Length: 189
Image (cartoon, rainbow, N blue to C red; front, side, top):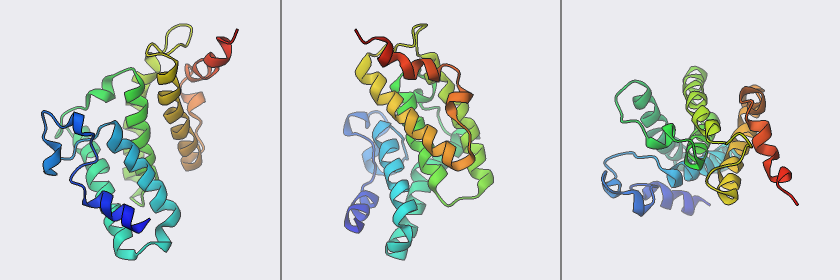
């Protein structure tokens, strides 16, 4: 596990190669968040949260700082107007749920100041509203059932994480979530 963490920390980016252009992420001089980076961040934060005390102390601290650099700081810069808006924050498709879900799960599991978490969470909830808009009146995901599963699966993981963090249920926060969750059952023949 430690070797795998070290390998991921040493990568200049967690962004998929097909998403390097035009920002040249492979140089490691910019922290871009895409669907892969958000997913990796969520997994590594969970790992740090569960195994942190059993990991090499220097590696655990380096991982924490790397997650802050790659995920938390770009979000804070964006919220302060010092970073460009990620297009997935404005989209109403699975990218929104996967990226916001991954990033939010990451910073909620990190050992950072509570007020910092709350500020990030509030912004994430505002942007997650765009995902909910993407469901039709019949609660179908316009991208198809496989993308419904992918995006809504990340929404469910985020729901669980937030409920553990502060007791709030995203099904109460977003009224469209319950009909969207029921869609697969409704289409059965």
